[in-house]
Length: 202
Image (cartoon, rainbow, N blue to C red; front, side):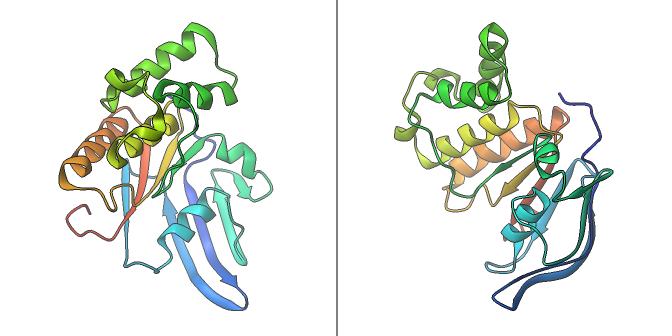
């Protein structure tokens, strides 16, 4: 796993995000990434997804500052994002096999050949999809697609993994499998920051 600490901790100082002159989030002062797992709770529409997008450099705060380690966003957003990964509530599957989705993430990082194959197999084994490696990703169930999205994000060895309500709309069985995969990643040393509106998950 990635042992660099350049992007941690993530520190938000007086962060506000507004759109069309309406404040949607903040002001926030908090630190993320100091603990193995951080759960962010709140009802729908409370700004949980916005917070993750801000921390991942996908959005810029209207005011305030976000620092990832010694780096301030957004000046080094791409550098920081290379040490992070994010899984959205509704993941997008590429038009290729389950294995191909994971290999594509590795290819974007310049990892190819036998090493990429070994890493992809390991990631798919952790999420329990190794038997479906040759299947089209787009025919998987919702829970299987979410586990594939987790594998695709984790395989690039991020320091921190942002998860935006990854078990929303899943049935209890699928939810348990996704939660087990997240636990595995945490045990491998990846810091987890996850949003939820479920008290049981928190």
